[in-house]
Length: 183
Image: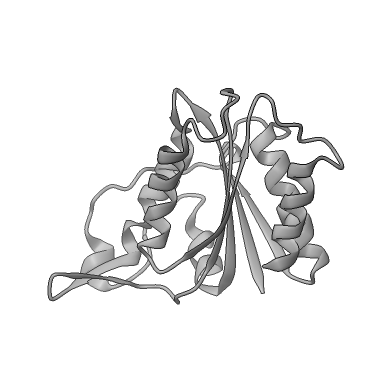
């Protein structure tokens, strides 16, 4: 199975990226093909609301660094979505990334129909300065719901706080690794 890691932090070794890479390590050791998209290194445009995807029942046609992602997404069985929390919300690059999935929801008879194979597993990885892991849970649930609305299934939500160790052997890292192994 192909597992895609989407890293939304500007810090390659920041906590959300570190925990997400541990999920991906578990997935790789379970025999899955892993591909990482680090948004900090990519030119990713926001949705232009051009409507082409809706008119032609297709993936987003914008010419940017997400172009190969759409094929990978159609082939994958799991997504690992990682983002830091800035000002009580998901970091901006991950919101832009999420909005680009507009092309995956088509309308027929007034109902939304996902235009992707159902059952893609999702692990959400978030980091925050607040020590209370539930402080921003509504923001994380709001974000992940956009993927659930497209037929994906959230398997776990990992939250790193200012008080949560994420070093080798920590409980959070063990859980991340096991999440990857179970994908």
